[in-house]
Image (cartoon, rainbow, N blue to C red; front, side):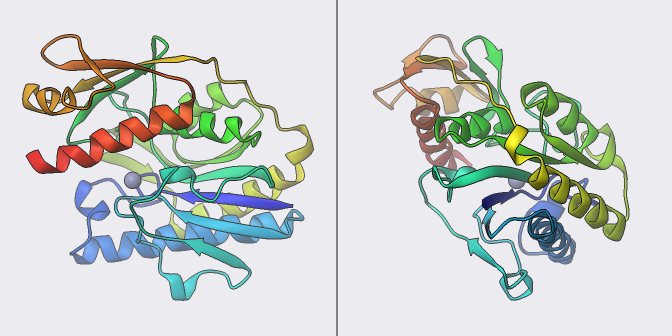
Length: 272
Ligand SMILES: [Zn+2]
């Protein structure tokens, strides 16, 4: 039984500020250490629960945050970008479940460092009329491969909104959000213990995990954080400009939709 563990950093215990998520400072070095520890906690829990293989996918920023030398030797690690499938790289039909570790709430919600894919450029992503976060987008990609979401860890806002999407998943709450940059966090050790226990339980639960089929075709709407960004996004031939701030398009699958979103996100770097 193979488990994919996708690890972000904003939902990790002790992280409340953008500086902790950006390379080049001491606070980030501490945060990536905790990110690595929480990834390892999920790996250990998965093996405790009967997994035979675990792939850890580094899913934050430029996808090379995890301290490779400290990863549990039973796991393999997927690092680096650009890459297809982004935060869900490593998924295939042989995966029994995907675990979302250190993830965060969607843009415009009350979670710590809440955003959807790109906090600089994307104000809001809407799929078939519903506001989407990363867990909705990437969980739907997993569903397209027939793989259910088994574990969620992050702040209470992320857990609440994501359990609505994946009610059979098991959640480990690492901190209680009081705002975008403030939370009451578990200790590093307590967060890892909670994630390990939850990952074991989620692995034991694999046979009864459920998933909702993705309703295709998909209508996508992306609202930019600035009109200049919408000008830029409108240059991609697949999209329609609908007003000063927004573009829309249709996608046959969620995998296609996320490829478009990630292409627009990469384009936005020219206006930073
Ligand atoms: Zn991130």
